[in-house]
Every structure is written in C-alpha cells, then in structure tokens.
Length: 299
Image 1 (cartoon, one colour):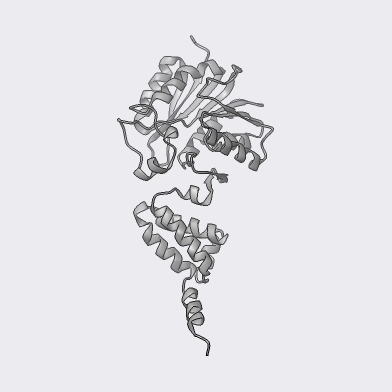
Image 2 (cartoon, rainbow, N blue to C red):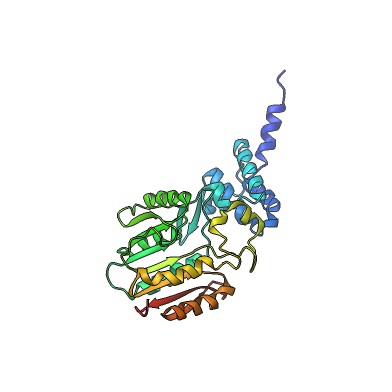
C-alpha cells in the first residue's frame, strides 16, 4: 500500500499561498520598518511577478522550491542585507538599475538631486557636458543623459567595483555613446575640459560627528561611499574648492549632503565665488543639498 505522505505533503505546501508567504515574511521583517514592501519585492523576484500580479493572485499557492528560495532571502534580509543586493536591482527615477554588493544602493532622496540638476540644465540650450562625480551605480549620470537626450556625461569614481557597475548600467540602457567612465579620486584624473554641470552625491557621513547610519547600512554597504572625515564634510569641502576649475562660466554645481550640513556648504560655496546658491529639499521638507552657479570669479 502506498504511503499517503506525499499527498499530505502536497496539501500542506498548497496552503502556502502568496498572501500567507507575504504575511509571514512581513512579520519577520517588521523590525526593519519596511517589512511588507521588502517581502513583496523579494517574493516578486522569486516568482518573476510584478507587484500587481502579487496583489491579484494573492490566493495562488507558492510551490515548495519557491518557498525555500523566498525563506532564504527573507532570512538574509532579516540580517540586514539590503534588498537591492538580494535581487540585484533598485528602482531610481522610474528606471531599474543593476546593483551589486560593494556599491552604494541608490536612495529615493537622490532623485531630488536629479530634479535640481534638470531644472538647471533647462537654462542651457543645446548639448551640455555633465560630470557625475562619485558615480556609484551611475544612476545619476545615466538618468540625466536619458532625460536630456543631448547631454554628454563623464561618470567618475575611485572605486573599481562602482565603475564596473556603472559600465554595466550604461550598457543596459544603451547610452555607451554618450557616457564615458573614468577612474578618478574626485578630480585628480579628469581632463581639464570644463563642464556645464557637475553633479555629485559624495560620501558625507561623519566618523565622529553628526547622525550615524543604521548599523545594518554601515555593516553591508561600502564605508568608502558613506564616510568622509570626522564631520562628514571632507569630500564636500574638496569638491566646493576644486569644482570651479572644471566648470564653464555660468556652469552649475549640484551636490547632496546631510540636512545639518547644508547651510555650511552653502556658505562655503558663496565664499568660493558661487552665485545664485540655494538649498534644495527632500520630500520631508528638510534641506538635502546645495546648488550654485559659477560665474568665473577669482579662481
């Protein structure tokens, strides 16, 4: 007589629906503050489904093989590994960028930096030269190239892992003819041809002063892309000081920083000779960066 165990096992597996998997995972990830969202991204990745498909097929069973993969991803996420590293991508400015471990994960607030840059580029008719300094995944420079259609971009970073990731994203979006990747520690290896726009999201977390990143962020994301001296302003100060030599007259510098640094950075830019400086804000209303126009004064 055949054992009924396979039948019972099949019935037991069928009870693990999409909804049950999401509910269980959301509870396990609740301490992260984004449990449901993370669970949906991970399960969608495992099943190859969109978020809409998950919601419309909430009672569908999830097969045992998919359950095992999903549980493993949930456990890794519970340990603090970023979702982007687990699925290999992150949405930014309504586009999906490939992300590998060792490269800073793009943040939603950086989309505000892109908005500020695009607003400034609208004042410059025709083709423009753009420098994406500390490019990471390349999401800023690639987005600007795709949104402007005529912009020529140099994407630079000191980290070879970031440069490789940027090149992969450039190839994915088919913009090889408009974006050049350069290995450079800030401006050190860049040619002196001036740019219409320099845009940068550099490291700006302090090792001793200012808010600390969440432990899981510091543990898993590259510290070289996060920390910049005791108060987090080493890179910012160097960029403000050196950027004018790489800007055309009338060119702009747009940079991201922490909210408590913004007024200090704006003062540095004014002292350096930038005009029309302004703070730009994130969706919470806090200052998240500074922009300014270089008018060719006293290099």
